[in-house]
Length: 288
Image: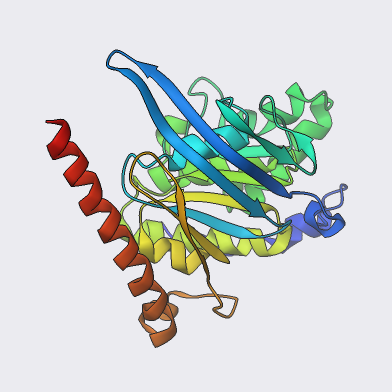
């Protein structure tokens, strides 16, 4: 199954404007001095420590770090799923206190409703936001066309491949026209070829919408290929130890992965991640 190119006719034909919300300055994320401590059976666990992060409207920023470093936890603070123990998250100057339609979320596991059709899954968000059934149906069809899945509108998620399920997940996340797209290792469960195609498909969609994207991954190649900036987190507790600009030309194709410029950024990230992974192993040995 190949992933179709972005269907720009869907953008042109839809009655709503597809002009990026970030074009009017929406989607600015400010995380300030975030600490997050969880209660566990063995006592308090500090997952994130003194993490501060500024993301400009329309930026594509990846969070990169060793397993268990708090990447997803920090993203969940931005999503409003988790309240920081200390510090605050602001979106366009407003404190984040709960989830909202201004933040679309895509998880590693697609989290689609198995009892709803593909179109019904995508229409669910607009319906919950108070959009009428006819417009919600139109929005769903538009976004399914955008990700190349119009023919599967009446199918159920369990009949789709993993890559197709994630494309439905992206369409569903975009259907509320969010200013921020939060993606938590969305391609981690896919095979290498599908993952590669999904990355290119995502960049095409982002180039049209220019949502702010915060993308969690442990894959260095993926972070470099996708991002404007890579924010590297330390081993637990998660602290931000580097903010690496990715000044590679766009649009990007897979040929970029073998260029000297790409490899230089990859080596910088790899050295940081290796250091933090060794530190995590030392922590585990001491705890044992």
